[in-house]
Length: 205
Image (cartoon, rainbow, N blue to C red; front, side, top):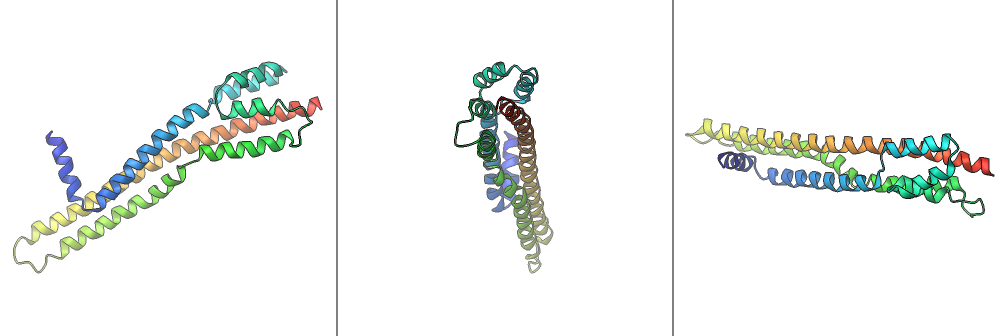
């Protein structure tokens, strides 16, 4: 209980900018949870791409298609639809893969831009709190008594706001880096699987 009260006291000493930073922190956590759930349902993982590539390299096309159909996720769904092309469609298989993969990647990148904004904005908000605290600290020079205490309190407010801003930015940067790395892996898997599927289509023609 004392720890909670101490935390609340420090938070209040940080000044009004702390409430904005708190909202940013909550936003980062909300994005992280939402993206985690989406990636969990839409990304089949590297194991699927490896299994699909193994089937295709052995010439087991039917098994590869069956694997894509029974696996949940964006990539398996695109492969299942793309490999069903007979060559009579108005859109080529390559065009289909390019357009649909672009749409899928856009969905994977959704809301990650906001993390970039928070990474840049949070330290600036902390700096704003620093400036506000310093102004409050050095505005007491005309007061005869209690100058040292007032100045110390203002500097403390500045340091708390700066620390909060940096912590928020670090968390947002870590979340963004994690999901960006996963997107890079998804892109690599897509390129590998699509090239194998397109090669199969060319041989069939």
